Length: 198
Image (cartoon, rainbow, N blue to C red; front, side):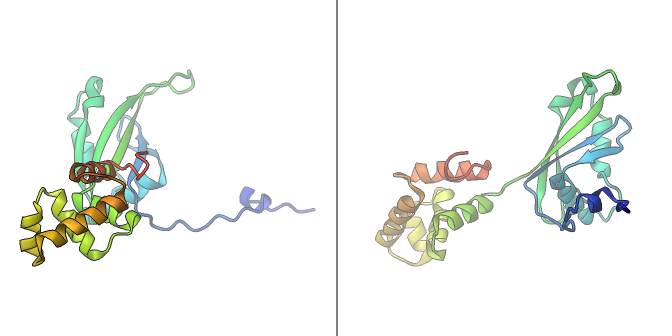
């Protein structure tokens, strides 16, 4: 009986083709020469976005490598940099990993990427999750920047009482009781939490 040569074929696994994904965050590891060792799919998508903007074929952005070269490894946990992709901006942190096993003696660098959320991102997330109408989303955007009911009414060409009615509907849909509760929930969404605060 002939066995298929590929381990995937022997196990009869279906491996879907890798598709580009939009990533909120990602992790990669590199050696001390700044060569990429491993990355998760999120980091792969983020690097693709960053490299598209820079027009570079390099796996790791030159800006990241130069910043790491200029950092004292003893203080690597303080490392922070922002990298701009074609579609997003990413915050980047780095950590020095030292092996606990005798088989791996060389230290490695781990890099964590996280998409920097804008207030507009949080408003869109809340709007979708809470089922806000386009007009309620407009009101939410105004509340998020501290506009009063009167100021919102003037901008949207509606009465202040109509604005107040919309704000009450937004509070009900978001499960909060005050304007500051609305802003607090937007901040939570901006920090990557969902409606349950997780």
